[in-house]
Length: 319
Image 1 (tube, rainbow, N blue to C red):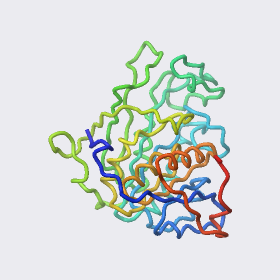
Image 2: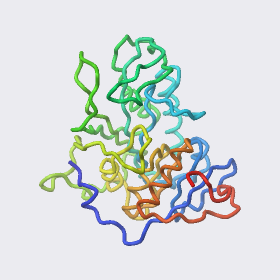
Image 3: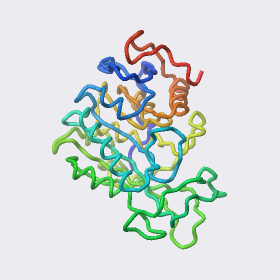
Image 4: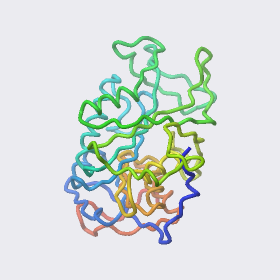
């Protein structure tokens, strides 16, 4: 099991960041020596980021057909899982452009089951947020109640597009949420893939150790965690899952990117570890949540470039 967050020293200086709203003519050269969270579409923001500016990416995209975030342009409600995979693969093409040649991508992605052609999901008394008023039909080639295999379909799609698929890691959840199903085991794991842009890349093998000083294994046992500041987000990264990725894939001062920032965990962990961060979030509510969470953790918000194309004025989102 990777080292716990509490076992890693916190930088003595409070991390600083800017809260930006993307504009079509945005110039993100300020990220050369600063951190920022950015409200906007990931495709648009990635097009404006300098090539080769990011050392490592740690992210968890929306899962297919599991949540409706109610935001135009969201990923995850495509009509078919194949369209979903294509949409993510195209986005990660853009991620690959901004990644350094020795950079890595740490990708957490969950699986799902076919809907049986039901256009809805009934409320689950164990998880009210699972209810949905719309669901895509069963994908072509699959059957009712099939496990879709989304993580591996995405991993292979990225591999075909030039990424090096270096490792599959299993996030084992001892406190996994119960399920109402009675004809299969309750799922208690997710996949986390390590991918690289090149065959040789930064991987600090000594940055994280398991029990008895052993090198990190491929099964990480880690409880899910609730966070008061992230209340209202459907699925938050536990900091303990993000931290080993940041430590293994980057060094102090490097830029860490999360194109699906959500509740802000990647930015929070990267800042605490002395890295710069860039987090992109499409949902204004989650952007505000990330901003509040960073402030609650002692991060200092500072102005961007006043009047600059990526700085329309201090956003009022979230108060």
